[in-house]
Length: 305
Ligand SMILES: Nc1ncnc2c1ncn2[C@@H]1O[C@H](COP(=O)(O)OP(=O)(O)OP(=O)(O)O)[C@@H](O)[C@H]1O
Ligand SMILES: [Mg+2]
Image 1: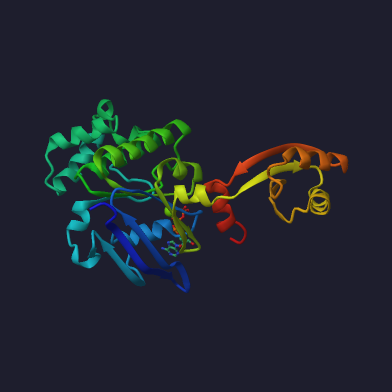
Image 2: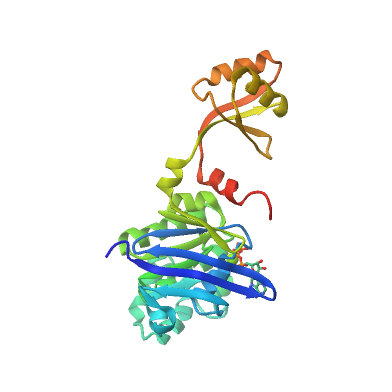
């Protein structure tokens, strides 16, 4: 059944000393989706994933997978799920093929499958090279190959594009989409890179200071996203004052990068421009914009660290 939850996390918390790395976290990943788990460095993404994969014990809360409490899942946890956490580790002196062989043995997977996943990840030519000499991009791809080895229904990828160049990032992103569309694998992918999530996820959960602040579809973000005029002027305070007094505009956002977002008189950018120039204010940039995931994310997680 589509929409049925593959992962349900309720009131999850992890305390280290007297600090909560994750607190009261609730999230749901539904069958068939690519769920973008978005948060700044230190937000609690890896800690959450470690708890899901049984690598650390939650201080409190519950985790259900495929509608079953995690504790009752037994070996199915590893049979039905594949995960990479932070940087994938390998035996450096073994070849790519040998590294996967080691994992295949553990799950009684036949050797043909090793070649299949290597080929899927574009690593056929490098199968017999030792991992020691692999670039970061090749390691990330080999990490994904290993995750796929046992044909999981659900994969969890913790920052799979960490350290990659733009071409490598695009390649991994396309692979993730293919796994979802062509192989019907449900995917939770964590990231702190907004455009990346925006280009591949169907739904996004934003984690901030250990807790989930918001969960919404990209369509919702785009729909509810406000439209505004983005301006760059030489005197922001004076510009706001002029727009307030002469044009009756009340709402502004002043950004750290010197940009000013104006919410009002959006159908008359030329009037705003002329009014500012007449008031002796230099306008070097004026454009009508729709709020993006990045604007939305910054408005939620910006400010205090
Ligand atoms: N073993 C640990 N002992 C103490 N504190 C920890 C431990 N592991 C994580 N933390 C703290 O928990 C918080 C969340 O860390 P976590 O690694 O989950 O963040 P993250 O979202 O994965 O960040 P990043 O994007 O940098 O990978 C951080 O403040 C971190 O310092
Ligand atoms: Mg992390």
